[in-house]
Length: 226
Image (cartoon, rainbow, N blue to C red; front, side, top):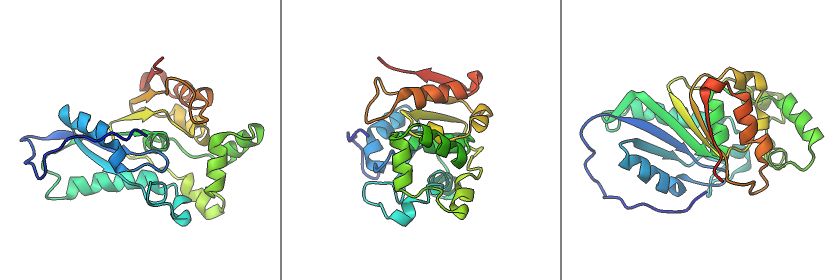
């Protein structure tokens, strides 16, 4: 996460017209405020931006019972979209046909789920058994993700949102949680940007590069800065 602020005008009048909406989802223990640098840049380019602080996985909200409900992350984004589109105060400047979503790390995981990636607990367990010590495996185990049959059903549900027309996935963490079949069926355009080098324990070969390989060629634009 990048902690850089942006200058704003308090209570400024919105520009006339209707503009595309971008919803931002933060990474693990991040928050809406540390997306300000990106939100500000997007606003300058003519987007309406909504940034989320996800309960359970944000800086100031880490209640274990909320953390294990990881399926709520994509639903948070869908709820924000619904609120914006139905709120008299917010709907007017938003173009409903132009809704996009972006997120780094765990926000990238959220984006893939919203695009149609389906959590696959059995496949993930096999991967973790074969790759002991892998970062994502340890984190999801500590968070008690999909540990009960009821939670597993909710994690493996279809969490996609067809209102979102394209995604930006920034240094994704958790590619191996998704079934290859579901990734191969994603048709919504997806920009995948990998970290310039392996950082924070993320292995690009099993994260961003693996996501690129699993997505249909026509759906993905891949960037890996040097």
